[in-house]
Image 1 (tube, rainbow, N blue to C red):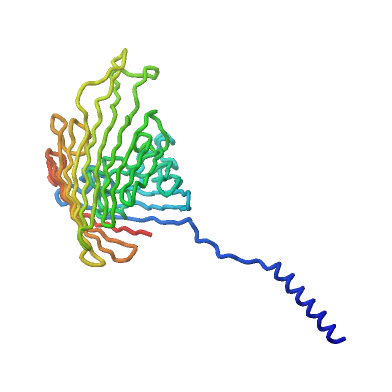
Image 2: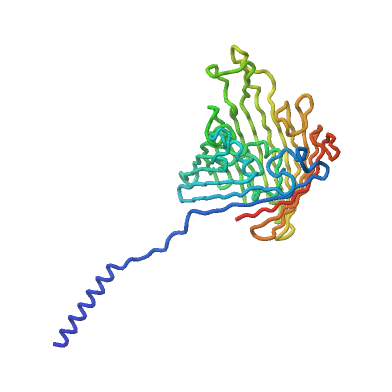
Length: 393
């Protein structure tokens, strides 16, 4: 009898255990978040040696960003990135003077006032169609040039003339193709350059890039072609003498390689020209005669790393404007031609893994008078000093 009772108890326990096991929930470890945040904060001090540093007459090269007197603000940059296996998105927001200068073409939607688009540096989505093809749509920083908007990716804090007057950003659709382990191709159709919110002109710009990269560095040949200010339209209100520029064409080569463990060499050269375009005569629209106007330039970058905490770099740039292609950038002669040679010596002092100090000496020498010296006389030369602090996270 006892054996039977023990057998019944055993069967009940086995049944209970089996029932309990069926209700057990197995908790799987969650995948790491695909959403990441990064960004930077920067500020600087700038002063001239041979030009005014205050008031309406303060002097600075006509290049972008680090050109304000005294202690000045750069920008705060916050980047949210979602990186999935097949799809992803980037929202890149900027605040402060450098950020406002970078997105100067964005307040169109607010009627020229500072709307919410004023803080959008990049805003795009992408789709990895395959291992070799990626499609991107939205607003993305330019693929031309050696330097970029964020100070964390530039060795020199002040920027070159070529960077300052090439495109900053594009809005459109681009396709990236991985041709091989080393070769890549990009093709894009975009709004006019730096017209980031929408297309006000009704014309489109084509872009292309052929890239070659290795572990030591890479080289990229870039092209942009398209009408940047639209076509004159007889159905629209026109004023006699009103004109429109023709199509812009720019070719740009960027390359950089590590020649040793401590020495890096980079180059950037560009040629930009815009055709004469068209003009309203009062009764009809006619093509304008004349040569194209624009600019060209070459810059060399030499950087040497002396220790884990210090490196030094020299940028030398020649920049030339022809046929009045740019106004207020370099001193021009009666034909609208002028040039500048700019030499910039920068140190990078890494005081912490997140913080870099950049002391910098810069000299700009024009072919024609452009600057004002300390005696308020016209001058071809300007020498300056800058100290920047760049924090990255």
